Amino acid sequence: MSLLFVAYFTEYGEPKTGLSPTIRIRDLSDNSLVITDVAMSEVGDGFYKYSYAASDNAKNYIGRAYGGVSQPAGEKYVPCVSECAGTLQTIQTNTESIITYIDTEIASILEDTGMTIPALIASLNDLSSIEIQNAITGILNIIDGKVDIGKINGVSVDGIGTELDPWGPV
Image (cartoon, rainbow, N blue to C red; front, side):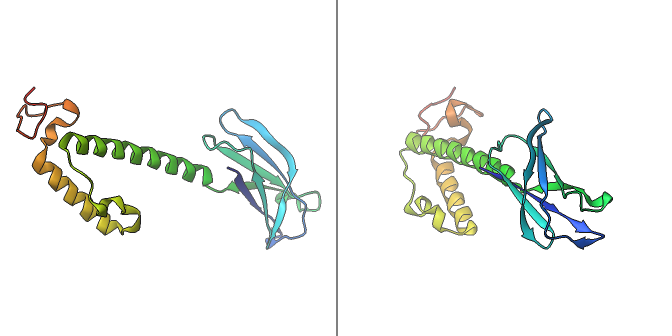
């Protein structure tokens, strides 16, 4: 996934268009220069962009743009701001891992109890967050009435088994 860097140039405080700025990008894990003086594209109103296609979502980067010799001395170099796509991708990946873990745990509980997921739960993608909360609460109430919650994965908290508890007292 590429990472978009944006720079904003002014000339005496006014947005500067018509420049041919270049960008340098550093990998903050080792401070190495990964992009050296590559041309940026003009967006308009003083904004310029560069898409860094070789970015690694697990790393952090910083950029600096050079506006050229025509820029006033204090306005030749500006920091580049990168979008947070890498962070969002990491959050998405972590969320998907958590969902997979929860799905596996629920499947295990359902298998151990012989229960099935109601059609309402199977269509969670089409429900609002309130409906999802209500459905999950309902399932937990059903499970709580049929399983010794203290013995999930064979670990007993209270040591009390029931006829619905296949593990029995530990």
